[in-house]
Amino acid sequence: MYNRKRAIEILTRHLETEYLVRHSYAVEAVMRKLGKKFDPEREDLWAVTGLLHDLDADLVDYRANPELHGPKTVEILKEEGFGDEVMYHAIMAHNKSTKTPIKSPLDRAIYAADPITGFINAITLVYPDKKIEKVKVKSITKRMYETRFAAGADREAMWSIEELDMDFRDFAELSLKAMKEISGVLGL
Picture 1 (cartoon, one colour):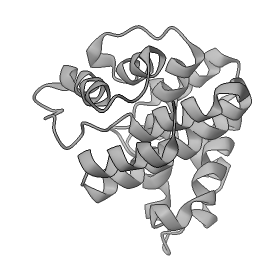
Picture 2: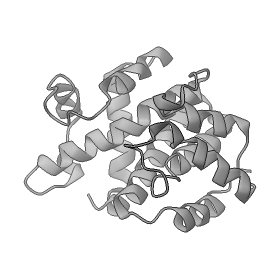
Picture 3: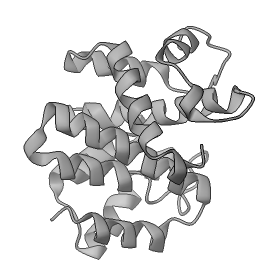
Picture 4: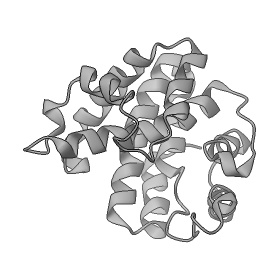
């Protein structure tokens, strides 16, 4: 049901903007590690949910209609005959504007994983060589308190990982490791 190859086919058919595709792979990597930690029997569900969570990003004007980001992805996935209600709910819950309540660890994880990948990317880009291998967990935790850095990053969402009884520092470490493992795909 959560076939990664098919998910990638769907992703590439509906999402063309390169940085959004890279972001999708980053969220997939983080979600796979979170799935392995919190729900090992459904690790593939967690990973594919991360991969497809922004499937509608090229189709929906988020600034004008943020509430459509998520529902459009679910519509596409249903048309493709891919996923299930658990996946759909998590995709909806990752965007506060849909007013979909966070009910499960999967929902909470995608809500937190989505912004941390962009945050780590922003930190990487301030390094002279722009290589993620140089980024340290301490840089991530320190920058969380520098609200002018990556001001648009949803810090509340990232901190919310602690509702899963995971320390933020551990989450930052897990996320950084996941992204380092696919640095070539991310261009970092």
